[in-house]
Image (cartoon, rainbow, N blue to C red; front, side):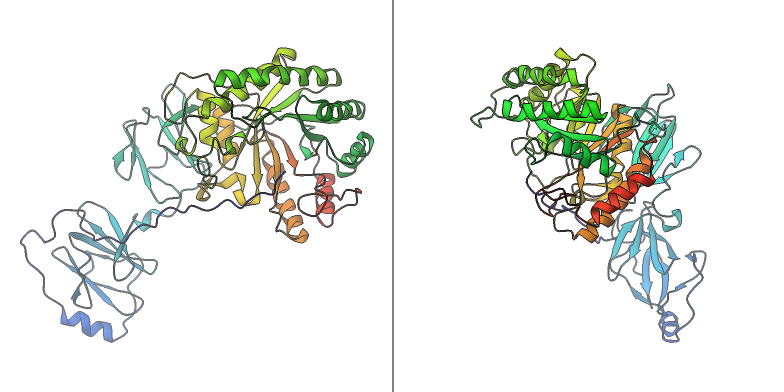
Length: 520
């Protein structure tokens, strides 16, 4: 596995400083320019005490800020120490709040004085981002992480006073996991995607617990320098019960995996098999169509399942980071929250490969569970596969259904419970989203810190992540979290060296956590 690259942060353009003129023309109703206030200038020089927090003009005649500046309002214009502020007009109210000057114009829009200009904002008296779980009703408004103001009237949803016409008629609007969900009068829930579409889902607040006994896992490779017996002992020493091992239908890969399955069946450990087919044929050429891709992998996936089923393997991951293949992701630094992040022409090829692996496995083991893997914040990719859509928005394509949602989460991607959009904030709770949208168990099949971390810092990261993962396993249906990896031959990612010597303090941190937190 190549070392993970830091996900570049594509920060949204900062809000620009604007003229406060949204309420109409550039002069007051009479076309007059109010005169200065010599008394205000004199007051500023005296170092007068700042006005009480929450003072407004009107009803007060003026506001004194912390620097002794005196602010007044006349015929829609703002005056600072008697000098008209050319950046602000059509103002109806000034507000002194928590050490800042704010203004409201005739369009009911609020602005904060930054100096010398004004930046659009919300009324600061509303408070900051709403508490997770806030719902309308009983609340009357919700403020999201981007400082947008959401309300609901007569079943219609409004963002900053503008109706969201894509929203179904709502009986409840819910802010949960840093995303918006609504419930119709009929009880159906929808979640608002990053494109503004509302997608059918379940109530995200309902806690779901996955099967116990598989929670602590780790990754390996078929060509490790260990025997199956040594691998079993290494997992048992760590307290891991699940081992992720990938292969294709070649004797050099499949035979070691079968040998591992035999050993695991005796040891009562879980072998989680990655069916590791990609988008290209043996010569490295991209498959030509969805059908060609499907047919190329179907029989091979069936052969893998046939070889492993007798030894108790029941769960398979169908593909590894396919949404991050250069033929699929248009820009590897994007988070994957928008359909247009992905290549429309090649999308059917990936869909065909995934469908072929799932159908191939189930042709041998109808009751086997098949997972589909995603990275970073690829919820747009997951939604398109689930709903049978293309990146261009077209519908009616084969819908992909999986039994387990699997995800990779390395430290550069951000905290999976607050994954950012396009590598930046504000983040959202990805496991909650997946629970609500797909309703199947969730696995984090690769996770670790970046290779640049020192082992001391890596150990701290392991402690933090395991604490978060463990805390959410009963509420967000998290079935397993698989550390990457048992050994990388060095200190890049491994938790032991090639001679099975523990890498400290990471190894000890992991082992101690498992001992202290039972997988029940």
